[in-house]
Image 1: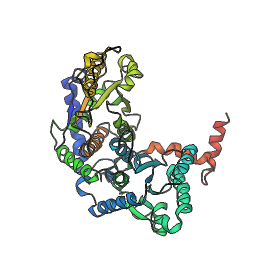
Image 2: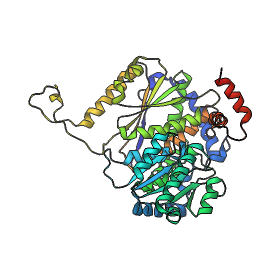
Image 3: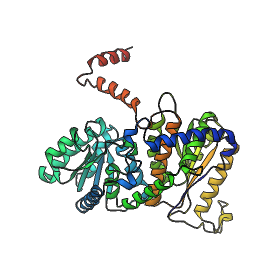
Image 4: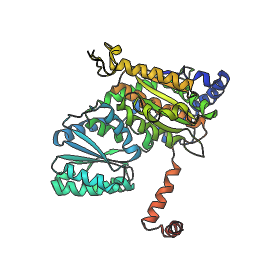
Length: 442
């Protein structure tokens, strides 16, 4: 089995043993709260045993749908926002080639309101065969609903009503909502957004699995990896990786380190960081509490943000994802002229240089006052992806409960929506519209 390990050697000097033990007691209490399923948000704990208890029949339908889509389309348009796209996006970006020569694309749409993006997408796909997977529990979320309305119209114009039905797949509520009603009326194949799994925890449901499977990624190995991690993390022990991670980050937070940087040395992980930021940002950022989740890609960002991390305000700490074995490595050749002065690297590989950059940076940042821990994964594969997803979900729940906030709600995201609807003159928002217009005219 591929392994995931946690190295805390570069944070131990920032947290005393007494401080660590004190926070660990709180995390142990959070563990009991999570496992007993008696804490706040306990109606959204379906992800906890999902890797073992997932719907096998729906899983097989997902595989069949992915096979059909890949056989009759060159593109899948995955329409969703937030948790309805970030999990699948991070998997697709992680496993696709940098210079994609594949004959099938998964394109994510409906995650912003850029007219230029959608117009150029329509132009790009007009002469290509494509299918649509629209992902929304309600079907009324503004960004994906606008995109789906426009894309559905284009699909019907291209293929006709009957064939369009065979190319639209709806992942939505099992019984109610605007999208479920439309799918039932039109005869679209549907998959379920579980009632007990929130969007940011939904990667391993149909929300993430259908687009991921369409990209040719082995979703069964992903599930198996997550289940292996689940079996490990359900043990309440001092060496439980999630308990250690939740403990050290909260101990650092108590000492004023309130910005966590997820660091990679492999740019394929950039979108994994985007998923991670939503997971922790939406779960912990409540009641004026929470560690701000950010990310950097090294060594690239060492030439831009490195100065701030090294010498700026001392409120950063880093969590580095280290891929032990690269998929492909290259040896650095000897050059007769040696004008760049790099012949001292002759015979070494690029990954060797990358690893020394990582080690040197870790020491420099520690010496400069930036704690950094390391999560080691053997390689980038479906199994380790599943392990990382489950590890961070579990650790996030522990960490949020330790902060005394509900990990599974997101009350703050409604504020901007109300204002947007009022400014758009949506029925029912007239009083708020007057109030906002008065503010804008000041």
